[in-house]
Image 1 (spheres, helix red, strand yellow):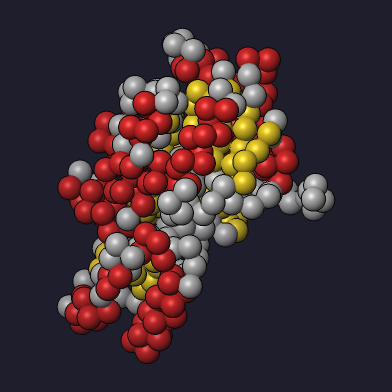
Image 2 (cartoon, rainbow, N blue to C red):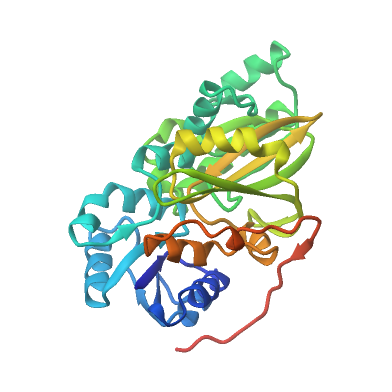
Length: 336
């Protein structure tokens, strides 16, 4: 059993987790558009064209066939969408994609669709808007107040996020956000909605949490792991505390049933005056999964078992609460 992790970036810890999980059963391969610390940790790697290049999928498929890769999992939102659109090609070649279906990924990647989805399912979420005029009208009607959050509708990794305190900042930073969007990789998905590429949201004052909502590979709910976010960097949790999932179970089960993802759905939420507000969802392993892993969860090992047709092993999803966990950055030379 050989597994490919695509768009791995700097997530070398995921390569290590999967290598330990797979053991002697096979190899862990990595792909990325440039060399990275994660590609160096893999048994072997592939440098791919950019995700939206016409050759991206053919190159991935060819690499999988040559290396007898039977399962592919991505850790990058844009990649998820492209892979899901080409799911039938992978299936025809006997390659299992571990992700949600295309519609679910579109809901998670597009923050406006996320907002509409959450409202439809009666899950609290920040009031959201697609234009400066709508924000100003809502402020005038006392529906929301400053500060207002500006961020890319199709954004990730905290790129282009601003907090504004008045109308002047709202107008100026909206233009700046849009420029950053179309000067970055966010331009690809943002091109689907070029005139509405920014989302505006009320700012919530509360404690932020990250949830790992676990499904099996048939999309059935298994469990949820919860972490309190204490320190953040580039959209990832650097310091967090593992906490009880009981307050979040009902929402997690609704999301599991509606999204029907495979393996993991990462959910960001706030608790404000004892009410849970969901902010974002990602159909992939996120930057706060390592907290779950270090607290006793071994999702990669469970994925390997599921790929073998085996049942859920409860010993792999034990979760210790009240642990403070911090990430470390270690400089390292990679091979040339």
